[in-house]
Length: 278
Length: 334
Image (tube, rainbow over all chains, first blue to last red; front, side, top):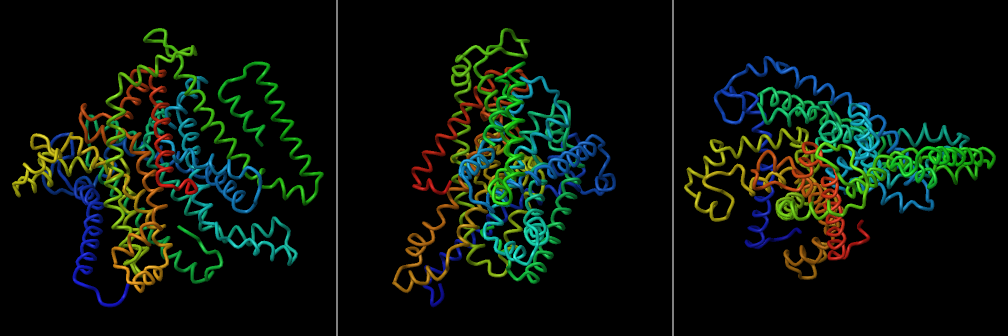
């Protein structure tokens, strides 16, 4: 790639760079709008057109109680389902990457299927099952639904993360007299923990943000996305933008913390557990 | 474990009832006991051999119960008849008419879904590939920061992001303003992007929303496959007097196809089933199959027709994925 470049090549590079920059702008345009419109002073019920700058939305971010309640419901659902799904998904990922056994191909396929089915099919089929069984819709059905798609997600992402894991480390610990349990908890687990946490964090985000599957299985339970969807037909209060901006800031700072921690960890372990691919 | 999973599906889908259900439970119970017993008696070797199954069991049972069993009850529901408008528990009767209704009454919605999703997939590829390429090959030490930036917009809620497009595309919004100032409305009208001076509620708005919302699913897999490419291969091609374009076409592009393949699936599948973009950015003339399924299921409570539509959607997607895999010659990528 080095050496002298012709003008044509240089123009080509500029063009691709230009497309990339435009793509970045495209990605961020709505985000700018969300942050900007959290300072809007809308006249009617809909926060769509710019009517002037105000700080009053930020002074009362929780002015719309339905929105705050819905956010709490979402957090509750996400915490419970993420914990369950992370445990189940980690077990599957460990089993698939640690052992060679009959039927692992079938299990692999089975895991990918929920991720490659459209959400509306997953949501409506699960709702059909609940209707046919006469289950009442609510917290339980929503949490079951979330665990269902999170298990696959955790298992698949974690398996990709620990693909290059050096299992002889565990063997070494056992040669030094550790029981298999002790070898796992003292050697393997600490090394794959970052991967588990990353998968858990992502699946937490999936749960908080899930709309379509939840919509079919929520009954009268209102999660944050459902509240926004319902509200969008009658009124869009600027508090939505304030809360969204807050969540955005929160996740960006989480990401920065994770990035810094990751850097430090990399320095310590010096690539013993190489995360392959991702 | 197979016995357990089958038992769980059977119970979940309601194949068995009453006495048979108890029998299934007994079979499940004995198989658990026998596994535990062999593990207990068999010593270390057997225990090691059984460990993967033991680890898999809970998760797989969960998926059997709440992913496979629902598909079965959906199939059953889609062949049921609704006796009256207020019959909320339709009974199974091999009623294929639901599929006929789904295809005739909602044909346009199916057509639009696949057309919009396919267009959005192509657009995400055109936008996402250059971005992934630049990050992977020219990102340098900022690679992970740039990749993080791609992910940032997706930390806000999906619905809020889509609502933000309402702000951007509104009649008094910035984009329409710029187009009017430049005086190029005609061009946009000609390209069928604008309709009577409006961007909102057009097919283009819906496709644009889909493209935006699923873009990272295209960028990330392409990035992953590009990053694996050894840059020295490109150098080698250049040393052998290949042009830059030739090196890209013959070396980089083929090696990044797995990423393109995965990305297209990750964009096309959710886009085809989506109804949020059509709801927020479209009009009654741009409804997609997701809108109809949701409307029939949750508002009309017409479960048989709604589930028949879901089934057709899933079948068409599966078939197109298989055809696409064949076309790309990449079955092993699955």
